[in-house]
Length: 264
Image 1 (cartoon, helix red, strand yellow):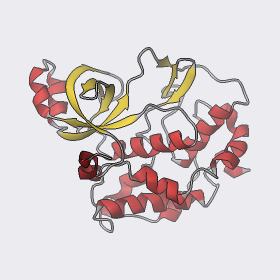
Image 2 (cartoon, one colour; image 1 turned 45 degrees about the vertical axis):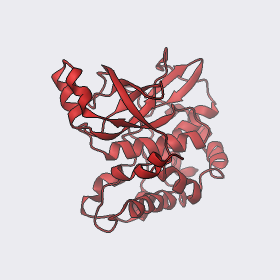
Image 3 (cartoon, rainbow, N blue to C red; image 1 turned 60 degrees about the vertical axis):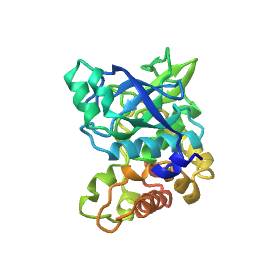
Image 4 (cartoon, helix red, strand yellow; image 1 turned 180 degrees about the horizontal axis):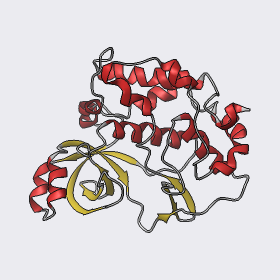
């Protein structure tokens, strides 16, 4: 880990944005393609976007969990953005977004030539079942046929865009609430792109349960930069916020009411 990574409090690589390339006008957050000083090209998700900084936390937590349970998901980095780059942008909307997003933003490895997945997988399919498990565990409400958030790249399925998961943290304005409520909260599979694969979730759960532990959850939260962990009553430090996320997710691991069919 570099000294700069220690400074920003994340286990993710930290690189500097060197050029803003083009906006991706999909959804309301206006992500953009950028180049960085590691010669990489990334989809930048901006801290100054309208959805707020907790969306970036969800992106990291769910993306890193996806990687640990064997799903393909683009590599994540932290992008250090100097808003001086905005001087060279003619689009006023992009200028405003860059100026609202100084410092640390999220970079998602750009997959050149990937295209959106809008079909189904043959059932039973272990990848589809793992995606269902991940989305039900993290309460992701944004993987429907209207917006699958899936890519095909080199013949493989990749999961992307997890900012709509972990809804519980949006209720922390008045303080950290009860993890057990989230643990018991069921998840609606009816609109999910892989809803037809629910019969395979029990087998996926048996495999994944050995991979996702409180220690793994702590490793995942260690990837979130300190400055994205905004203090709330009862959790005023980044360490306390990380512990709160781990507590909520650990509590959910202790029950299977959230699985499609209640784990039956």
